[in-house]
Amino acid sequence: MADVWIPPIMQQWTGGAKRVQVSGASIRQIIDNLERLYPGIAEHLYEVDEDRLMPGLAVFVDGEAATLGLMESVKENGEVHFLPAIGGGATAHKR
Image (cartoon, rainbow, N blue to C red; front, side, top):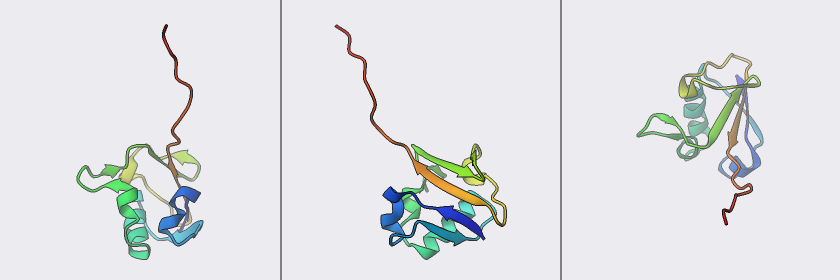
């Protein structure tokens, strides 16, 4: 099973769990199995209609950015991190 790390902002959907072990050979399977454990979490991770990860959500598998989205492979003992985008920053003003 893969270790799936849940960022603090998403722990409200896992009952406060910071890390869970979930089976799955792809990010799609990991999300499907997370949904079985924590009903409703999938809607925060991917857009069903568009069949893609939520905009602004980054996924890292074994320390590497998941460039294949839902199709990214996950090893049996892999490590998955879901990282939501952080908004804010400086803005430039023209005079």
